[in-house]
Length: 208
Image (cartoon, rainbow, N blue to C red; front, side):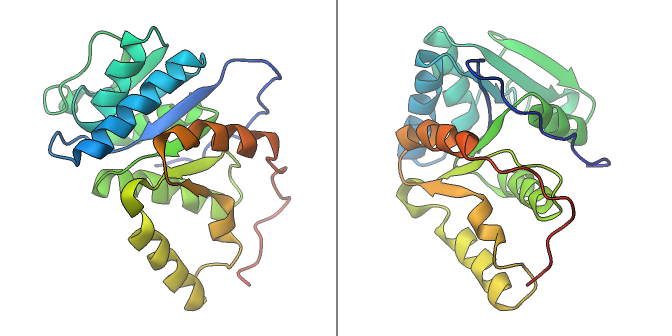
């Protein structure tokens, strides 16, 4: 993205939550991943939480959006114009069409109180790495919770640990996100993270 994210305002007590979902857009994904995304969408709808997602109707993101919408939930899709056909825009929900990927990611971030990360490919990796980088620079403190379904994110966590051991990533950084093994654990974990969210530091923490 070309600009830093805005400061994260506190979520007013009792106000509806909005959760940004980063995840894969492939229908060839593991059926358990697709089922987990659907379950997450239904859970958000049942608990009155708005889903903010990438706007497509395929893969995990389509599964989550359709499940949330069909369960009567609030859904906001955000998709670049050039992906309308490739990701099969899901017109059944409110959707904002933007010019490029940078705008998509920034708007998804701004519209959400927290981020859920389900299995996905390089696009999902790019999205979450940027958010973690912002956290490293003390630019936001929104909760980030990984749905580590079937251990999907373990290689990623191991890579981060490797960079920590190589002293190019600060040791405190991995503690700034959470990981849960089941889709149904994501929202409770996000609520816990929001309740315990620390204030942003006055300066970027040191590397050590």
